[in-house]
Length: 413
Image 1 (cartoon, helix red, strand yellow):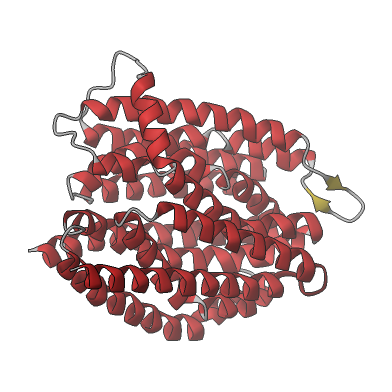
Image 2 (tube, helix red, strand yellow):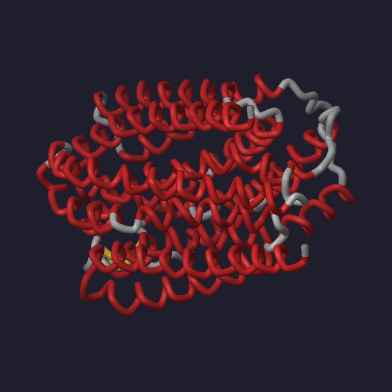
């Protein structure tokens, strides 16, 4: 029964990702063909910068909420408005930082005034992201990802239609950014409809907010540093290399990003079962052993077809042929991403958030230092290699910790 539920909800998430990825592929083609490497590079700068703040909205609150007893759903309203308040604070912070982002007009480095306007427009998606993430907590708690599927697919279709219309009419890249905001509004509205929880009148529970923020703080740090080291290369490329390089790496990472999201869906479906069996170490590690190999085999099975399909990137536009090499480099690190996605949720289930936070702080520092050293000479090739090295280090540390905990619990028994 457990495997059936896990499989069903993983299927819904993969179907969601597959459908939205296909639509995203069409949207990427439209944007890349309409605006070229430079225009696509500007789009990547805008979305990458704001995307850096998305996990501040999450901050691990869902993981803590899922651990609580909330049969009547009263805490959802408290979680909902706490997250909207966080979104407001992050919105203001992101736009203040954007004002001071450097720009070298002569060399085409950094963030132009045009890009800063795009950041302001796209930052409104922080609010819709807050709604979507909150709704996902309910879907995950009920072990029902079907509403998740409907919400995201509908939002993606809306995005495709608006982007197509704006591109056909010859509107600027800022209107494309606006299309993404409008589609996220559609996604959040549908998700909130499926939640069917009372959210009015508006209220804010200080005690609840303090408790859940304190509990989620280690997980929040993990997610934030995880995202920073995922996105640091793109931001450093924006500062150290021309927009052309950002566009090339942006396309390769856009498709790789789809692949590394796949293990997250399986982990999400497994997390409630890990929590339910954390006090039964024999059963707990039996589950982890089985799914460790599922993650490993799945990652290896994905590498080969995408390696040979990577030249299709050139069909977007001839300018994007150089994106094939960094995409293939990134593909080689896929097993690390699959396995660390699983291992981190095992450790969260076991209450090892502080260790995870330390690991991601360490890996983030390594990632940033290596990128600063090697980007000036090797550009996006360096970022692709460093991404794999960083994730390999994370995998080794997490695997060692899980093994150590397993040995300790076995001796204790």
